Length: 104
Image (cartoon, rainbow, N blue to C red):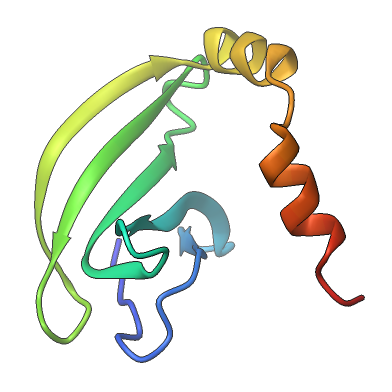
């Protein structure tokens, strides 16, 4: 799978693979302390159809052009546990205020 990231626009993006260009990953830039996205680190959540009960979460290090240089850490994560965690999480008051203040 070939992944490339545009260094000028570091937003979440999808990764595609295979003859049918199926979505297999979600790449999310690492947030820095100043509420900006890090140009050199990102998380990648990848689905492998050969292991449908697991997702792999990777911390990636990117080069100055936004290409993946190395995976710093990789963790297989059970899909059912992730679904359980997501279903129990509620937004904080700060998160709600932030997204309700955004223009349509």
